[in-house]
Image (cartoon, rainbow, N blue to C red; front, side):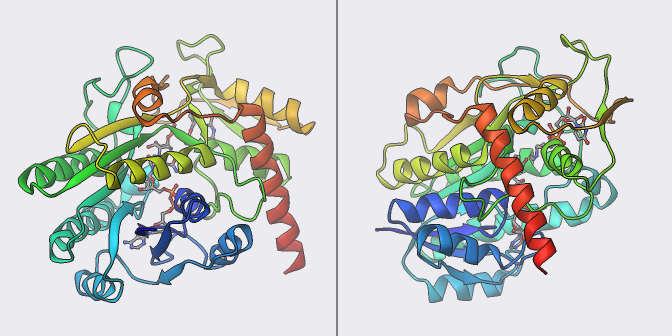
Length: 344
Ligand code: NAD
Ligand code: WQD
């Protein structure tokens, strides 16, 4: 079966996608510079699938090394491009780091594609491109709102760079996937989210608080215009998200795309508030999450959830996992991490 380059394949979403790709027989080459991940993830992937994917420790910003990598693996048929920096707050402090890492990586890949006769490109975008949508659930045709951070801007500009490049090169095709909020871990608990330092995202903070690493969770904002006053998001199991990438790659390789650039929302279609997430987490795990209601976090969107019907109908993909199962998987993963830390 076809060989797929997965940039950022040691990271959170990338590693789960590598597992799903290998499960259906794709051969995978991972390029990752380990800037936000740990090489041990390769062992986790191998334990789950029985296959150790090819791995190259390369920075996608380094054009010459990427060129050499494509020469070495000269039969790659498609690229899934996850590699990027993703911390919203850090992007405000270090904008050039984000523009350089996220955009130069992307440009390098798009530039190297025709040289190495690769036509197919799948891109990790984000619901962040919608800002606060006027209509919910949000569809792919909703207007793109001004980005609230340099990180968000890299996704908006990234999408535009892809569209311009694909339309200028008749052989190219691309699928842009806009993720909502990925959470959870593989059911084996061999791979999962590995946040660096104090987590920014809700779920790792919830699980770290539940296990006692953090004293309490801060719930940012309690007077939003939502039923319980806390923000609403569309939380999707990372394995459901990973499976959508396999379908996207199959679609693009089998020339089933309906336009040269297709864009899909990947979400569940269900919005849940921060307080609902805490409540369901406590119910399914039986563990209390001490929390405090605090002021709003700057730049937060009040509420957003996906209309995933285009992906459901066109890709034949649906987010199957329940939020209960998803939260349980995140908890099992956190417990596994704690055991590993003890053993070290
Ligand atoms: P992650 O940080 O866990 O994974 C990204 C991986 O890319 C890491 O392993 C990192 O070491 C690697 N990487 C970063 N820059 C690189 C470079 N220049 N060269 C080579 N490797 C590099 O992040 P993730 O959550 O798995 O996100 C994957 C993609 O999905 C990113 O593009 C992110 O912006 C996008 N995304 C993530 C979320 C989310 O909430 N996690 C939501 C929407 C979109
Ligand atoms: C979810 C909700 C917080 C932490 C970010 C990026 C977005 C995308 C996904 C990549 C919000 C609340 C959080 C905490 C809290 N990434 N919260 N206490 O902000 O929806 O999106 O990650 O593309 O671009 O902006 O995700 O997990 O940070 O927050 O109350 O300690 O949880 O206010 O309502 P967010 P998140």
